[in-house]
Length: 568
Image: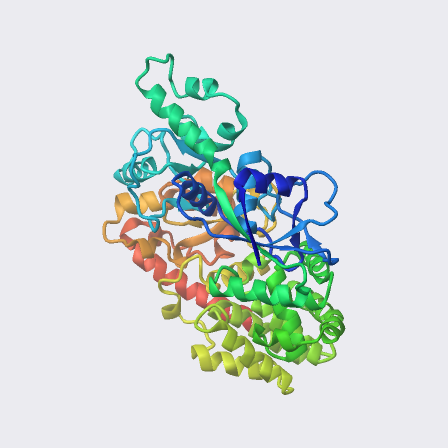
């Protein structure tokens, strides 16, 4: 194995010129903003950042595209990147200022540099100040809370943060991409408020800007595998290197082994992934691989992937996609679940597809109804989102493999969770993250529940931000904080205090007294509250009876869920 050294700039340029390419075995770009931020901070401080693993070969290899745009014809004998894709893609995006073309993140990664960061490292990496990959700081709030002050204090200790509009307006926060793309410091220093060479901050800021630019000169060590190695051997090395560091999921390693046997399969999987998204289901390549393995081996664990031949994989693929399409259609039309956001686990799709395939798609009315019941209960009760989900999936696949049907699946579920009935006790403390909440939405949607202001029926797929459905606190958080001292955060976020309305309606209601705004809604549209199981006894809408309101709504929700899951 040869060794070499290349700077960050040399590696980024090699990607841009397609002299460094990705083999098909590589997973997609998956890094989040905080990971990019921390990489830059490490390189800025000169910390170790791992080794880059490559393979120089003249063998014809199926390739995968980088998440960042590249330019120029492919090199005659390019270097294949085996380990380092996430780091180099991130650096390429920030240094070049180009979008990272990855699902749901088709925009440049924007990182800000703090010209006033402390000289010494003064934070611990486990401290998190991000929400959904974005630093949340309301700097314009006139009455910023102590929590906001503490958040700002922690952010000010960092050299790099994920960009937001508030921080970007402050003079000491500078775009990292701007630093890399500018030839001089004049405009940057001007923005930072430096007006002359005599300014005491001039020297400090200039040195720090140069230190950021020096990230391009950070030198990585390259380990280069011999060209004499076969693709199968290189795949095995890739699997071993990545599995030891736990940097890849099992599905990523399985995908690498499958693409080694079945050349061109990644493109086929991604095509089906796009197809599934059009059906409303965000079915990742990892889930597609798990489905394929399940159909090929009647179990879902990836440890057997190495023993599955290319012939078996290819012959099983057609049936897998046929069954998944059936599952998508069954879940949408027979269950009323038309979007993956309403699923507590995508494993439900795999089980449904496997069931249909084992029945040769000849399914009677009674079995179809029993499968609908299982699916709704598995979704609500968290069949595959609690405990060992892989074990439960394998148990269900085994039941279906041995010619049992939905009744056995219901038995497996009852063995796991106990009663298959919904009770008010079970609903206590459940939040918007629970499967019950998702199933509650499906039930209300089936009843044609509407937005409380516009009358638009609730749906997870509404177009336009103003019409997108959000969960609304019936007793608003601020109202509870100001009027119900005994209420806990758990009670406020309890699903009994949540309803489904549009973003625009949510803004209109804001933190109004429920006794006032619920009366207005009931006067305008009496069914709006009833269809979301909101108690219409007006005396329950007062702060003094908040707990009674929750108890009554739990009763109504439990009754509706039970009748929805198994209609008479």
